Length: 145
Image (cartoon, rainbow, N blue to C red; front, side, top):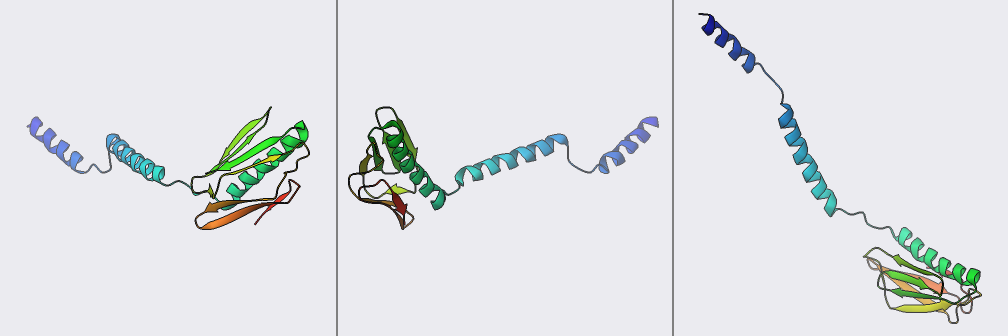
């Protein structure tokens, strides 16, 4: 009779158990992390126009400053989504976001005084918008419109 009463007592205790086991919680958490990582991998933040224009502006200012400080000619090449700056003592490459592209291949040089020889307008395109970097004739000064 003792055995029958024990089995009766065990069954009601198992029937009243509520909640999840640790293994079940870890399994659900693992699935949630996997799904979240997959969705976040496909969502990349879009580069802001202001940040990309600032990158190009800083690259041009760096090239001009390098020319004036080192008293040497600095070559600037703008192609696809890159700005390459090079001289005898210095090389730098600035890569823009993939959706920002220069419309043509542009090349110009800053002389030791920080001036360029000809006026230039460099066009940067993104999502149907075109940004222009307009260099003034004879000087290395430029503005963005």
